[in-house]
Length: 320
Image (tube, helix red, strand yellow):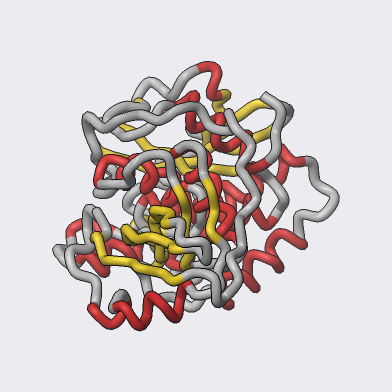
């Protein structure tokens, strides 16, 4: 069985549908017109219980946030899109003004989207604070800071991804998906040592795209993230999703082709133990509209599939 230990988050509040409101442009206060007054709240993380004090003391916060934009966000759905855009652009700290309190429930709702829409293993922690403007107005803010859970240098992986995708030039999008799926299955073995390890770092390392594409062994999240990396490099809209496969928590992919979302599960198309040269296609390109395969279920997690597809449509600019 393939195992995914993250995201078993039950009974959480679902948020409003993505893309309902256009996000407002960030407001830039001049350097001398405001002061940041932030206080550490916590990560809310399912895994990270202590953040080194050096990463969040008051002087560091001031250095991180001085003269930075403040984003006015209308909904948690828009905040999820902002997270995606900020991480894609390499911004690791920023402040927002929200019309609601951001706490543990909101953290868990956002965490799924945050993890599932980027190829690396990231977490984030958050701050409560305020901004005082020159005219004396105090605006309540929430600050966010992203950090990596694995220790990989992605440069070799990104170079490999570029070379591989260059070899697909001229193929249709469908053929590219088939080729990416085949490459991952042929070149990755399921990491049973990480599956049974009690060391969380083994888990995170085996759950990365790097582990699949460079180390050639991974757990299911690593397979899904490798597919994400190659599909994105090929210009295909792609997401990572999760649910139950058999009796285990599991991760696989959604990819957009021909005006529809399809499901791909490279992990379950890779025999365990690994059989050299063998590629199954039992879990390749099933339309989402058909529902999951009979042994996969979208249950038990803090997201609604339709809202998640709305999120995918929003970040890729797709028509519904």
